[in-house]
Amino acid sequence: MAAVCKTKHGYIIQLGESEDARRSKISVGRMSRKQAESLAAKIANLIRCRQTGDKMTKDLQDWLDGLPDGLRKRFEHLGLISPTPSRKWTVEAWVTHFIETSTKPDSDNRRKIANVGERLRLFFGKDLIASVNTFQCRRFRDYLKEKVELGENTIRRHIGICRQIFNGAIDAGLILKNPFLGQPVTVQPNPSRFFYSYA
Image (tube, rainbow, N blue to C red; front, side):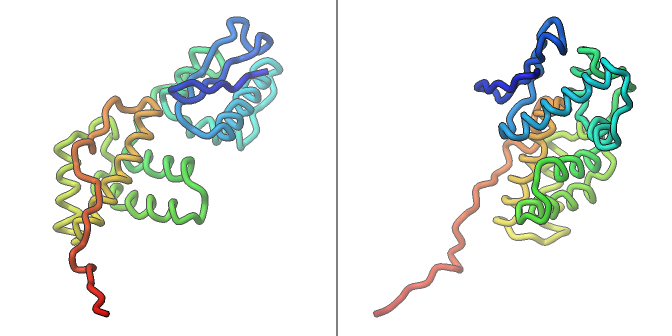
């Protein structure tokens, strides 16, 4: 049975001897223990299908189809799944995947990220996420200011969420560096909201 272990870099899933004679370890990065245990259960189902020849359920196949490239290649290396042509993630596809897998339905957090995600989709469209660079991300900031006409603090919040989305791509092994790093994200005090009370 696969064991879920926590390390300083996140969780790893160690396969049991009956699942893999080498007792291989799969690094899954930073997530909650519940998410890691859910992932371990899906991996166990993959191994069962491989060992018994059973057909995968639609839910398991849909999950497998949405795996980030880094994790999928690890599964292929372990022989859990058959090799497939490398998938090229666009910004549009990654934003959709990130929102669906990293936020709770109908939550305020999902709505905030989805709002920023829609603007990322409009600006970058089908550009490959691995091709996005620092210059383009600065242009995205200009787009928020000049075209969308957002205030400075709202822009900073947007960029903070962009960092979160692209950090997810780093964890998934799609990119090595976050192109939104270096842009200010700290919200500034707004003097127009200050007021004085006179007794």
